[in-house]
Image 1 (cartoon, rainbow, N blue to C red):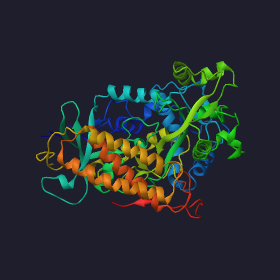
Image 2 (cartoon, rainbow, N blue to C red):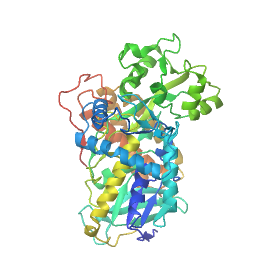
Image 3 (cartoon, one colour):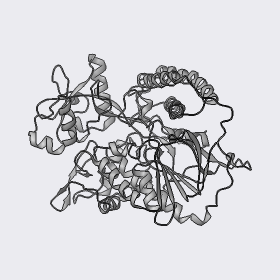
Length: 530
């Protein structure tokens, strides 16, 4: 049994930077429902340590930031999108200051740090916990708005489209979403004139990832099933430096540690090995270069990890710049002021996703999207550090602006059928879900990781085909749970990544294959059509 909720003008899926930015703008005149899968702070925004890239320094220019973004993205970026986002950055920072985000300052000016791939200092930050400060400010503003309803504990299953109307239509317009209310176990209909997808990436497809537990590619998989194109899913960014610790999973050591002078060292010889891979940029080379270098060291020398060392800097400097990291490591018996930090690469960011235009529109009428769930053309073949939160603000605002501008064209939703679970029963086979989840993440790490080959990709494809049949059979027979919904989406996302990787016969940015080590002269997006 599902209840239909029509009390809202717009539904936003995701309570991170992109979703809340859109919701706050819309809420000035519209009633907005924000759905979050787990807690309201469970997304990637709260985890972002680094900061937000913006041209604010006297010696810096938009052209410099555009060029750095294009270089990191290996020419696959869309120049129009890159200019659109970068020119919108100072305004986004101003708005965050108005919301009370306590950015670090040097007297009256914002303190700017530098990260890999940037030619200038242009990262505004709140110590090394920027994302949490941004999440807190946005959430506080959303909670204060009488026009925003925040609904945590809602696991979205599939978009409601014209196929779900009481009078069937194949037109494909989106009217909202079916979501599992995890409090009562019921599937509910959330219906509105406009829907914004801001559900984050697919990082948990991999065994080692800095992404939060809920980053299972739900938004990408849902949009694909509803008929939207996805692009560049093979471009999975691996962060070079995730803490290697058997007790603590996915603790990220921010790029800024290297930006402020940290060295990468072979843990046994102490050799500063980036000199062998990129002697000019060393530790400040783009992430794909650094991640591949570390991966090569680990595989070549049979290591578990490499060392990241900033202990040659004054202890007060290290503590002041990285209080969160220093405190976390101290609790694990590691003192970063006196010795090195053991690090390994881990999946960090989904550069591909649902295709959107500059107004944040997807291929599906009635559906807009923003943030990591999308492929807007900003990141190309590799995301430049600290451009991700920026994209959330600019495209969250673009989605809200377009919905408001076109409001009178958006018709009232039709009558929608309730969710049908008449033919399913409760499952006592949770072990099946856990086993499949573990298997996917392991073979994706081994076969579709930092360095790829066609043979490895074919092996992954074969495993995905077998598992898909198993999971679809399971999904059709049992009552939905969050674990089952996530497994289905994880598998769909894995299939899109492998399919995209097999289609790209070159090495570019984050997609590095031993079978096609050269880069083509022409940069082409890998666009998949459902």
